[in-house]
Every structure is written in C-alpha cells, then in structure tokens.
Image (tube, rainbow, N blue to C red; front, top):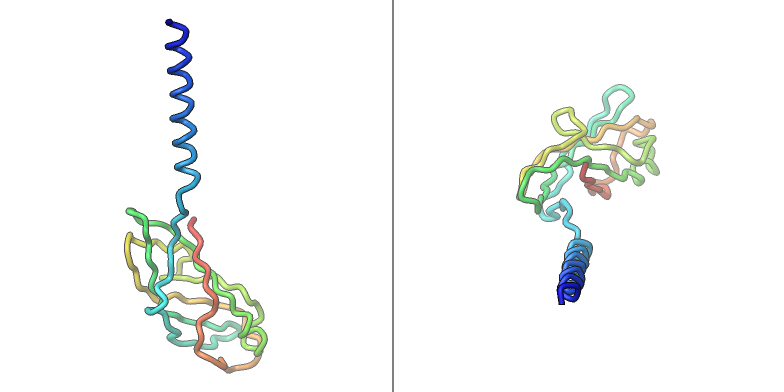
Amino acid sequence: MNSCSRLFRAVAALCIIIVCCCFIACRPEQRVLLVQEELFFSDYEIQGGSVVLTYYLTFYNPYSSEVKVNVYGDFSKDVETGLLKDSELIGFYDGEEIIVLSSGETSIYVTFIGDYDGVPQKFNRNLPDIDVKLI
C-alpha cells in the first residue's frame, strides 16, 4: 500500500506541475499599447543635418508596475519623399532612449531624430508605424 500511495502522490504532483506549466504558457501575452485616439503629430524641425520630429503619444501599460520601453518609428514614407535618410528611428523622451511608463495611461511627447536628406518638407501629418518594445 505504501508504494501505491507514493506512486499516487508522484503522479498527482506531476499532473499539478503540467497543469501549472500549461496555464503559464497559454495565458495571453500582455504588451504596452498605444491609445489610438490620443496620438498626434506635433511638429518637425530641421536642425543642421538632422530632422527632429515630435509626436504626442499616449501609452497604456497593463502591468501593475512601471515598465521600461523603447519606441521605434517606421518613417519609410519620409525617406521616399526625401526628408529623411533612414526609415527606422528610435524615440526619445527627455533625451533618453529608455522610456519609463507607470501602470495605466501615460501621455508624453516623444521625439525622433534622423539624418536630413535634403527635401525640407514633410508631406503629411500622419503618424509613422510605431513599435513599443519592452526592455
């Protein structure tokens, strides 16, 4: 009887471990989101050989604690029109690449800086595709 009891406990413990692993692996991944209704282009400026583009972005952090993120913008359209040389730019907040977001919503001005390609005009006020990556 003793060996059956040990075997039953071992099987039960293994089943509990498997169920816990499945629960952890199957839960949906949370990510920091942009609140689409609260995003807009603010301004751009040519400073020497650089273009400084500023956007007002609102982030939603679903985690219960603050997170650190990097923000990337795809400026392919501005490369096509000759404003910028590079399409992927990293965003800065207060001069820092790493942006700290509190739990819930955070609204800030994010600046992207890229190399100027010679055409001194931004042809639209659309937002670039923006990717938020947890650090």
